[in-house]
Image 1 (cartoon, one colour):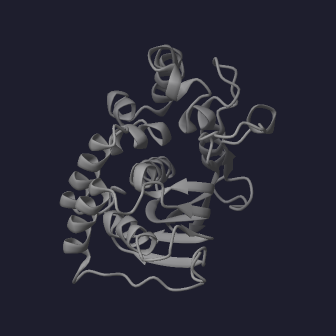
Image 2: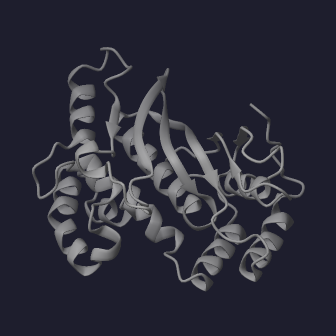
Length: 269
């Protein structure tokens, strides 16, 4: 193991694609297999809260995931924020929550392998499952509207980890790696903080960041604030595919082409 393996890294990026790319570049350096911890700050959101991306990088990530027979970025993002359901709901958050909760049981039946234990968004809006609640996002939004000048600190957080279900001695348990999210305020701006125990960077992280960005945009929209920043804290960021694999080499060729000239420099914490 290299002496630099497992070092802490902080990255700040004004583009979601480039932020993810910088993490990948760190993990594909010789001797590096993990970052402990990783702090990633993503900015560059437009007035509607949509993250700036490099389309060519996202296309390359999806091509990589298809070659690996893994879920694409949209599918992974859906587990954190189901954008399609929000679009169908036409801006009605009560209808949105109801649609998702009623539909999720069918989603689980359709794909029990990936959804048997729930999804991140399901735990945010129906922690105990089967419509039993609590809906943590609804509580925060309702409370914010009722008490807009009240404290804006510890009450604006939601958990996805449930010790009763998730403390397990199983050798491989991929869900939930995201432990909780919280929201902080800076004047008229909203920041979303996401806390991961571990994160698979090649196969999951791009979709994770996309879903979190959409969640932040939704919450900011409902609070009539501007979504300004996504902060992701990862206890251990892992390179989850062999770095010499042809799929990785092809992906990183595209990544390096687009990072050059628009680079955000990682800073050791």
